[in-house]
Length: 410
Image 1 (cartoon, helix red, strand yellow):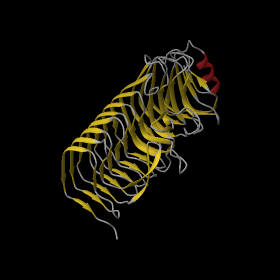
Image 2: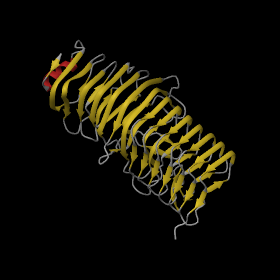
Image 3: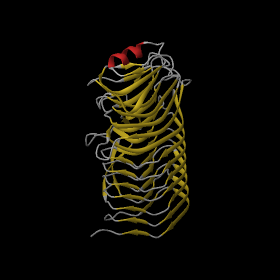
Image 4: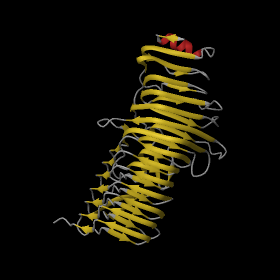
């Protein structure tokens, strides 16, 4: 059924006998819309859009719904797309070539105990998820939800939600989404799982706007949270975070292969390039990691492990911003084009506690170890009294080409 007015859209969505609803043109002042189970919502033409009334959540999905080729515009601090948690299953939810203003939030909670989510093209132009009070907690911190949030919240470990998420982007360079960017999570360190065959992102810009001096709240540009089991993460576009405690890439879950093809950048204090607290089998960062904020480490492993990590180049600019810090056993680590820090000693967030750290380029802490570390392009520090290397753990084989130097600024 083709609809070209708000009244026609409302009537069609309420009629469960109508399977397919085609939106013709731009509809404004749209009330909250709930799709009946099995309904498909399509846009006809490039200008097909639903502009929801101010201050309301927009489109509510139920079971076996699809949305294709539509612009959905809500207030940025509301949800453009969300789901009815009083149905028993998501069924198969599909979003294809959808653009939103407002958060896209899919939760398995209350009665929802099964389902699959398929995304093939989703651009969250603008969203503010900071007011969402449900936040995963672990390692001394709470995590803000993302512009795109998929979260299995069921405590029952037998509840599994599956997903394939391709073509997700969020924010713009001058206008990041507020909160995390892309957020996928299971219920906790135990409980319901989220299994993702592929998580593929385009360009991501996010800013948590976390108040300075807040040690127990973080965000991530792309965040695989606890009990998220992901076969492959691919970051095809740059991922950039802007604020305090805004991690760029962060893993608390289990990822077989994580590949970042474009640059990883953070500008805020304690905005770490890649944080691992879970399990990553293979990590490949094929473009530079660069951080500018105080205490913003390039890469750290404080819990869990990484079997194989390969980096292009890691550079940090501020005090307390360690290049690489390892405090757990890992396997093989390599850097192709050097490891360089420019800062001295300063505050940095570690597991919800602010500590004084020096901007050491490569730090292996007591309890940390590596089977092999290969670095081409040298290991360099520029801060006064900052050593390039700190080796308090065991490294089976360490190879550095290009020298180890402390070029102290005077």
